[in-house]
Image (spheres, helix red, strand yellow):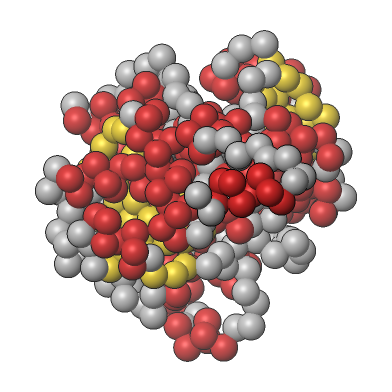
Length: 411
Ligand SMILES: Cc1ncc(COP(=O)(O)O)c(C=O)c1O
Ligand SMILES: [Zn+2]
C-alpha cells in the first residue's frame, strides 16, 4: 500500500462511522465498517492559496479549473470535460409557474453524459497510482464515459453492463475500444460481478459508490453552477438519482466551496427517482435506512435496486434541507418531449427525470415560485432513442409526388 503525497488532501473519512484513513493506491471502502469513503482536504491551506479572483482569470474551461479540490496529480487535458452550458429556461419555467428556472445541460460532455466528470477524476487517479487497466460496472453511461476517456488517455477499460443496456451506449463502449462484458442480469448483479473481478484480478475499479473518486468528479458541477450563476447560489438544485452518487457529489461540491469561503450556503437539493426504483426517496421519507427495491423503470440509468451511495445521498439531501420525490415512467417519457420542445435540449429518460420531479413538486406546492432553480439534465437523448420513440410518434409517410403534398396541406 503506497501513500500518495498530495499535500492538499488530508485523507479519507467514512460516511457511516467517520473513521479516517489515508489516501492510498488500494483503499476503496472503510476498513472498519465497509461503508463508502469521502475525500477530505486541507481547507485552510486551499483557502489561503486560491481565490475567486484567481479562478476568474483562469482560461481553462473544463473541470480542471478546480484542480486544487481534486485528489489527483494527473490531469486529463483532452477532450475537455465539464463547463457545460447553464442557461435560463423561461418558457419551461412558465409551465411550472417558476420565474427563475435554469438548465445545466450535461449531455454536452464528451460521451454525452454527466458521468464524464466522474470518469475523468477516477482515470486521473488510476494514472497517478500507475494503473493502466480500469474496470467498472455501469447501466451504460459510466461505462461509455470510461471508454471514451480511457481511449483519450491511452488506457484500457473493461466494463460490465446489464445485457439490456441501450444500444447507443453499447455502441459507444465498443467504438471506443472497451472490453465489454454484457452480464445476463441487472445492473446490481453486474456491479457485484465487477467487484468480484476486482478482488480476484486486482484491476483498478472506478465503480460509483465504491471508489471515492467519482463523487469528487461529480462535485465539479456544483463549482460550475456557482461560477456560471455569478456566485449567486441557487435556492434549489434538482438531481435525478440512481445510486445517489451524483447528488452526494453535488452536495460535496457546494460544501467544499463553502468550506474554502467561496460561497456562504449550500442550496436545497431535490432528489428525483422513478417510482419503481426509489430506495433513496423511500429512505428520506423514513428513518434514513436504505431498503432495496425492485429497481424497475424505463429510465435505465437510474434503474437501481440497491443504491451504492444511498447513505451519502440521504445525508446530502438532509444536510441541504432538501427533499425527495418520485415520478412515474409515463411522466419521465412525457418530460423528454416537454424539455425538448420547451428548451431545445434533448435528454435521455434519466436525464430529464429531474424535470418530471420538479413539475410534480411544483404541482404539490412544494416549490416557492420566487426560487432560483437549477435543473440538471444528465444525459443526452440520443443515448436512448427507443424510449423517446415510445412517445414521440412517427413521421408521416409521403410519396415523391408533390401533388400529394398539396392534397395534404392545401385542403
Ligand atoms: C443520465 C444519468 N442520470 C442520472 C444518473 C444517476 O446518478 P447516480 O447513480 O449517481 O445517482 C445516472 C447514472 O448512471 C445517469 O447516467
Ligand atoms: Zn466506516
